[in-house]
Image (tube, rainbow, N blue to C red; front, side):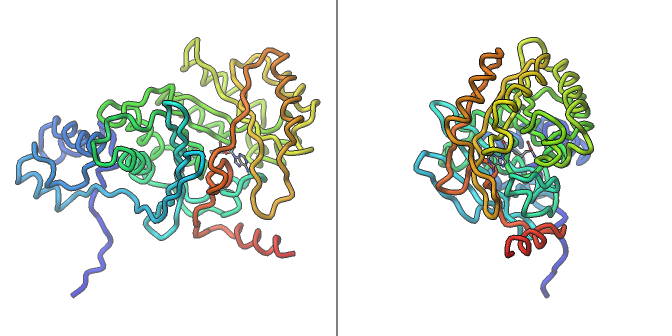
Length: 370
Ligand code: SAH
């Protein structure tokens, strides 16, 4: 007889130290079992309890009955000419999300997804056009780091720090999946996880103000804000959540977050440059005024084309003029290099394969057919 019971095993992949300890204590086991198992999972990439040789056989058998270490399934992997790698990852339920690794010098930045699709519908982003399906679990978020580290280490153990930086800039709005994202962030930073410094873990948000305030209660990871416009009228069009949390409230939340970052750390302001939409000299001047009292650096992102959109990338000279206005006003700004666009891995091009639960993707498809 075939049993089709839902899988009720606890997936240990997503448990940070404190939750792993609680799990073992509840089983009546010693606390140190948590560190042993965490090391096997995240330092050695092991998913089979039988390989955990420092656990006694009875404990291993017991774990097999009630728990599992299950990363999402990689269905496709591609390599860009510039070294960028993209993994398409299939999740329970059948939708796919994408994870991108961007090597640069001796750094390797992993761009991680936090939701299947996104509910925010920013006008320039292809993820938003896919609609929204569900939040990723902590195991599915940290599973992306696990998969990348495991592929890179080629079975030699994961603690060679092959992923040096993580940015939550893949699919989804991380602050709308708060608890799972925080568990995954903790695992990225804990020594028994990936040991990545809090300065090298960046959460990027479209501006969920209560989420920013909640975040500073529990962590001090680096924060990036997808601002993209210097005034509310324009931002309402590009980033619709601005209608709920306008720029003044967003910047006030940034100031509050800065208090947990301490003196030398700043907030990253992300600003996509779209031709003739938000890339004019007056926008740059308005942005410089707007941010005058916020310790920040500005990351300018040339728009990457997405299907069925009239937006175009700003020409090179507009980008240069925009940056020069900011630099003259005293800002540190960088222009993000486009990486991985030959494999659709560049910012805003991550579409995955979302089984939409909203009606947005069908609306989008029917609009784009006209
Ligand atoms: N929801 C979060 C995390 C998603 S990453 C947020 O909004 O910050 C979002 C980032 O992807 C944006 O800041 C922008 O930097 C980038 N992005 C989205 N669409 C893009 C596009 N078409 N071209 C270039 N960058 C894009």
